[in-house]
Image (cartoon, rainbow, N blue to C red; front, side):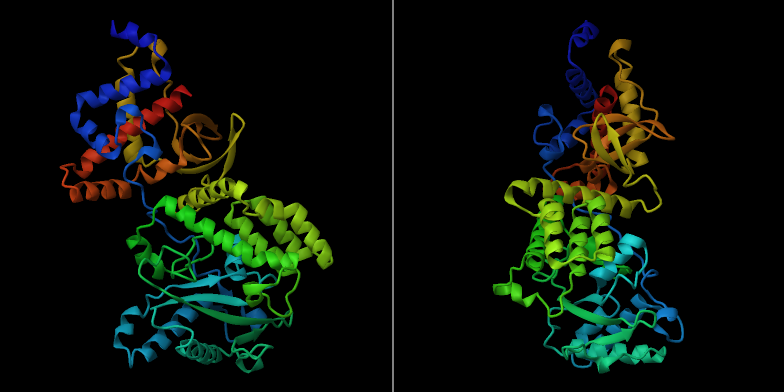
Amino acid sequence: MVKRRLSVKSKASIEQETLHGILARNPIHLRALQFLFPDPAEGLSFQSLRIQPLIAAHRNLFRAEPFLLPKERFGGSRDLDLVPLLRGVVDETLRAYACTRPHLLEYVGKTPISPYGSMGLSVSRWGQVDWDYVRDLDWRIFLPPEIGHLSGFKSDLERALTHELQKHSLYPVLFGKDEQGQAQVQLRDKRTEAIHGFHFFLIAMKPGFVQGNIHQDGGYSPHFAYFPESSVDEHLESARLLWSDLIAQQREDYIAMFNQLSFNIFGENSGEDRLYKTRGWYLHKAFKWYATLARARGLSSLEEDLLYQYEHFRGSEAELSYLARYRYYARMVPSTQHLDDVDRDLARTSSIAYARARNLEDPLVGKPMSVDGTDLILLETVPASFAGAARKLLEQAASALPAELKPAPLAGPIRFADNLAAPCRAHLEGTGQAAMIPAEWSMVFCDAYVRRAAKTAKKEKQPIAEQEIRQALEVLLASLLWRASAG
């Protein structure tokens, strides 16, 4: 009787019936799912989660090794590692300031430093500093709020850097000032005779460091800052940054950067824009700036085109304006009608960045593929502990169904994928059929989310343990796998 009733139901109804059957056998699972979703009977979607996931398990994709001052280009006694050099200089200056402000000693070794601008983009693009591409060595130094640009810290930092460079037989040129007379430690490239200056931007590291605008609130956007050491890890681990907040923040950063740079292409130079346009601005730099924007949007082919133009463009300012307006500007402009596209691109790029951070050794993360005409990007595999339990639940549920209603077996890997509207099956070269789960669930089927949900339950005085939440999520994953097998 039951089998006959199920045989006339849609695949979606069968899935719901099976899910409810699993839950009916274990009311603890049902209680936990009701805690996670306001009304499980109405469907279990990412959008209906009552506890939004945090951006967790973020680790740096960049290490200190690529940031190198090579002896063959700058002289000196040896190749010099830039990150340890800057770390030592910052800590030395902090210790000096701690003579009158003892509490600053607790920040020694902990203030994040970040290569910025073309140097960070160079390493992210080619895996090393390309000195034919980089002009200045821009560094963001995150400091306690009471240390600012008017404190004298920056001047002391530059003096300490000059002294440290001289220890390694590297001697700054122009007596520590640029052509406009501004303080700057500069080195000359022996191969090209180009001058590379150290630029320091002091950022107030306020509470909630990971959140907010980098210049206004002391926070940062993951796509415009690189931390090639562990100094930022404790701040990332203690951060409370929601996925939705991250996308909104990145959109604001993107639009602000776009508006700041667009006047260089189109001749606008009024109001606050005048603060950004520097004398001697050169045409090629526009391509570098827009390549940064393209990278933030995940437009890799456009980024490559812009970087090629940066290296090879020989046209006039008018031709540059034409290229920007008709080839690039239309795709980069954050107009109101295109904000959904911007959010989608930023979400995609963030998904890839965090997946790679969690799975540095997985070559498939970030690989594009097409499924039924939809362009997907592969992310990490579903954690084995969740995947194994969900498979068993799916097999148990399917055993009660007639052969014609059983879901197709899923023996292959289970992966998250970006730009995926619903779970599906896909063929992965070398591994056969795989189940694909939409990317947003990667922040839910993980230990960090289980712990967050359990803490919330405890705070709300609901008797739901971590293990119960994990088991409820395993039921949820089994439901998603059912959809993938049916699709």
